[in-house]
Length: 306
Ligand code: HMG
Ligand code: MG
Image (cartoon, rainbow, N blue to C red):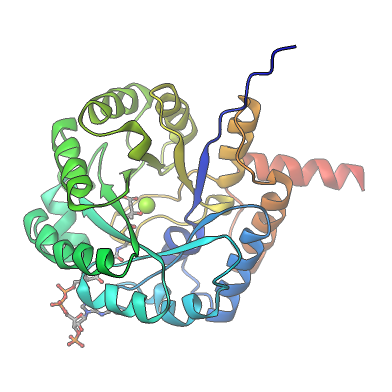
């Protein structure tokens, strides 16, 4: 009997950062460390745990240094954090981060609103971060925001996205996550965008980061999979959004992503039912609705069985 090996997909959990940064109720350091520990217990191996940004801009991420310090350093999980500039990078380094992420935008208006500088200026800030990270053997991921539309300036050309993605890659980012910040895109635009970007940089270095404002996030994952993308960002229970993108909602839920991937025969190493339990618990703690359809379905099934 011939065995076709299962293809692996990397799931990059961003709930403790992208999720919590936009929840009305800030969680304490202890609660965040608790959530991250629970997520690590489900088999997730890539968890974005905080952001070294101005607490005046994003109060929910204050204390990220304490969060990162309290996480284990030898459990096989890569805990990452956002850094917008040298100051953030140095704080992340002091907190023991082995991986950080810089974040750029494909739209000038979003760059200005999110990090208070132009796209070119953001690259001037990232260059010394990449240099210092390289010297310290700290891996750097790169994000591009507004890849399928900008909340301030509307349509964004795929060529503009590919240009920023390539700049981040050439600067030394090992992976470039393309963010549909406002969840404005659909699967056809997603396929076209990833096809274009995969002609300009290795598809293995691309990740999909879809917000679910219009319910298209899981369809966009499916479209990106068909283009050969094998890394996706997601948030447990579909938490969050982005504080600087008006009207945007949370990321695709990790539970929904896992349900899709496992159903298609991809391996992830993550226990869907365990993530669903974390999703139910964190939604209750935040007092918000659980925005994972698969999470709700699993919770309803286990309620029927018990
Ligand atoms: P700025 O005002 O231009 O910075 O903000 P500055 O260099 O002029 O400094 C002003 C003050 O900020 C100073 O303090 C600095 O010390 C401080 P003061 O002297 O006035 O007391 N400062 C910092 N404090 C803490 N950490 C730092 C830091 N840098 C300077 N790293 C800055 C520039 C980037 C800091 C600010 O605009 C900021 O923090 N923005 C937050 C952006 C953010 O976190 N957005 C959400 C995450 S991005 C996202 O969600 C999208 C993504 O999910 C992908 C997608 O969906 O598209 C990734
Ligand atoms: Mg995001």
